[in-house]
Amino acid sequence: MKKMYLFLLSIIILSSSLFSQIFNLSSTPHGYIFTDEMSSTIYLFQDEKLEELVSAPGCGNYLQISKDGNKVGFKLIENGMQIPSVIDLNSKSIIRLHNPVMKCGQV
Image (cartoon, rainbow, N blue to C red; front, side, top):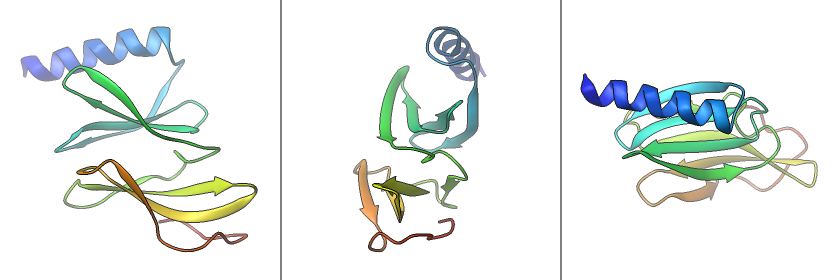
């Protein structure tokens, strides 16, 4: 319970200085995943450290966490094209599931 309070306090401090709001907050075995008010960056908060996993227009819209909590599905947009993608939280790598297309739907 104490760890949860520390997390919430850290989020309040971060949100007051870096963000006006935090969206799509999800707990995973790797820490907490969330996006900013513009849905333009996906963050991992773990062990009182904030890490930017990916930053691209709209990447935080409709992000999905896998059932085991090891992957984050999202839509990567580059040069106006959409790429269905997954972040592997074990390796912190981005896996592109398909070549860029005009409209790819949600992951």
